[in-house]
Image (cartoon, rainbow, N blue to C red; front, side, top):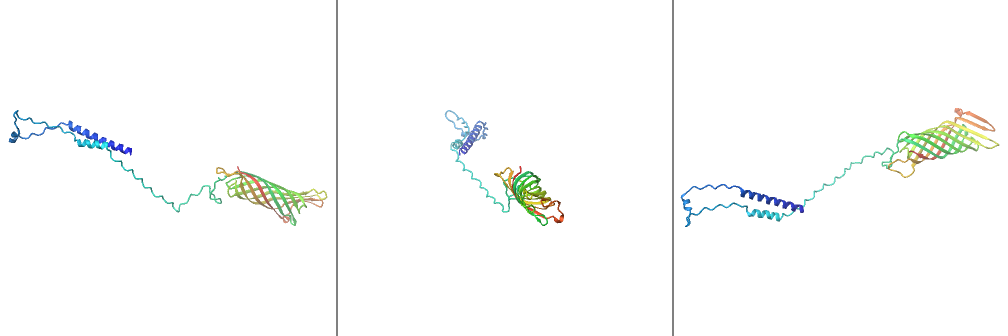
Length: 313
């Protein structure tokens, strides 16, 4: 409001100054002499004689600036014009409705077979280490017509690397202690194996479900008894066993949005399948050792469940 009043007052002062300058210029300008009228008889008569003599012609008065112009300029300066009304706000554009066909772009971390949204980053290729324990049950035959059964508490240590985000190769040692029957009567027993497997993880090497398959090299089951009356030992060997398993890794600790988990509890259910290729048996009644003929070889199976600590830095 004040800025509008100041602008009107300034305009009035400019008008007043212009009027004053114009009046001064008009006053100082030289006046052109009026043209003389030709002498006539009537002009001679216009001269009126008085007793003192003829009248002198009167001098013309200079023109001055009309007082009305000055009064209007002063009135405008003293009494400013009323302020202008405030400008009307611009009409806002109506909101644009979202297109029904527009869809958000897929996240870069989405992968096939994984949830659509993931807060925890994926673990890329790298080193893995696991160690744990479990149990296994041995079934089948040592040789044709000679069965074998046993139960073992096992220890498992594996080390390896994931060459991609989901594919890894691991090797290690698996050993166990338990009992064995049929091939050896109520014998204490032990077992060992060198597993070499490939794993496929559905998420990454640090967490989630996975499957594995590979080989169990130099599988051995051996039993012995300490009875002094009837000592007995047996050893069954298989050069190569087939190994398959399914498992899941459950991350340990609170999840982080900045880093993939590095530790997990690995639970695995495995199945071994093979045929014994050599046999050694000693007792008070017989002593047999050597390779088993192909026509006498029979299948054996091991079903095991294991829980291990998995480390994936």
